[in-house]
Image 1 (tube, chains in turn blue, green):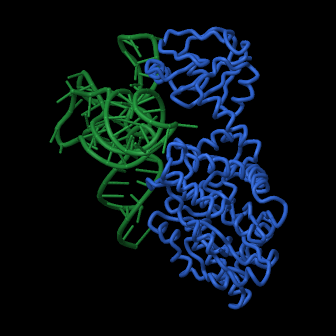
Image 2 (cartoon, protein in one colour):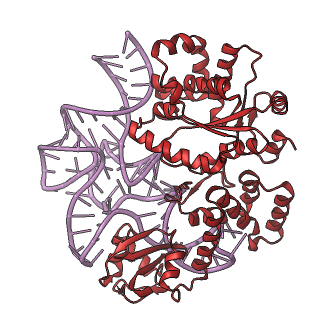
Image 3 (cartoon, chains in turn orange, red):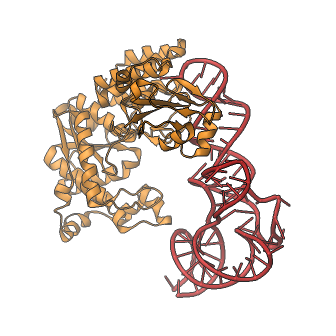
Length: 415
RNA sequence: GGGAGUGUAGCGAAGUCUGGCUAAACGCGACGGACUGUAACUCCGUUCCUUCGGGUUCGUAGGUUCGAAUCCUACCGCUCCCA
């Protein structure tokens, strides 16, 4: 299977500008492909992983992976279909760039990877140069027809965001020039921005210039919901924001109906391996071999082998249910990735403890959960709101292990 | 600048004409429980706070009234139309 065939099989291809041209370029020379990310937060989340998976496959197929951590475009903001974005401060941008750069480096390694900041060229561009060298090449008429812009004409769009597609076009051309980047990869919403760049390259370098675009279908789960949220929260790639354990669990809990799709998309397993796992889902769904393998593979890719081992260890400890017998050091090891809070060694009413520890948002809610039998302290179910927790009783007086519901754990660290 | 709308709990959306029965229908989401495969589906419960007496809410600030999400005034935000 060639690069494109593989993507098709994996359900990772929405549109390509020129399939045969691209394959030809890939076999004739070593070309680069790029994915742009704006540093809107200090970490990437699973949504970002979607184009990166395709870029990684491109790299594995022998190409050079180029990633823009968009300092300059991040300062402007890619228009959303609905509302204007809030501008980020310079300090935020720099902070966010740092975090994202580190993560991207992990995912792509040092070989055959370039991470660039478009501030290097866009930041130097003066307004008059911008208007003379690039502005002339963009037709307002064409820009207005791009989907995102068109949808915003009703509700309004600032000149700043309107200009975004020009900046992204300049990026593509700049990378085309200095990094041999011939392909831009993005989500299906990026099609307009990508073709802007291709048009610009053709204007500046002639129509023979090789430049391609590829978009990825919108990722949804079997119920039609946007992929990548767990309990309404984004799943981050930063281990501090989403622990490797939670990350692993996210994948482990995927539906039977989705797991094959995700194996294809988010792992580098071969077609044979994935088909075998898909068969397991059909014949032996209760074992959840496919989900387990999915969780292992993606966690390994994002957090590394050690994190997989740790997540599995922790999962085992949590779901065996019997945590009362564990030692303090075992608790420290196993529950390292679980949300924690600080507390004192004083005895405390259960309801107060839950609220102060951030396990519950209000006393009302805390009482409700206690009464429903949803709260377990150190492996023992607590059903009375008058229950008093004595921190010195378990784990050498160092920890209080709180469980809410069937699988949410919180670790109280006694100061 | 002129005109017409609109602002209700995390979100969507009733209620406003005909003031009290409204801490505010309903849907979604979220949370908990049962079932189960750490699943899906389904079912049940909860969803402003509380010392469980009560307290504070319907863009903001005033006013009318025994009583206002509901009536009046001003202000702010958003949308649309005209200029």
